[in-house]
Amino acid sequence: MSETIHFDHNRFYIGDRADQAQAYLDIEPAGDGVVRATHTVVDESMRGQGVAGKLLEALVNHAREEGWQIVPVCSYVQRAFDKDPDQYGDVHHK
Image (cartoon, helix red, strand yellow):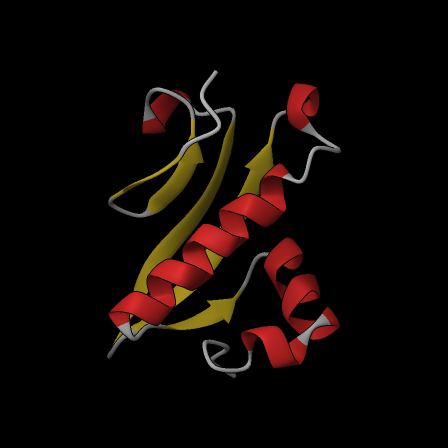
């Protein structure tokens, strides 16, 4: 499986197809340049390899490029934002 992160509509994912990805981070538009990070899922076979962090990094980089703000609905994203507010403060929508 490729380690390349892809973005297709409302999903950042690793794999060949968004609908069959074993690791993904879903977002949904919330209007006015705001997106909600709703789910981060990493298959058990990929855990412990920093995959969720790579997905979050891809989302944050994309948000910065697009001028988005992120509402962390997903517990993984919320913990990351809380743990390092300086790193994510520019994209964290409170």
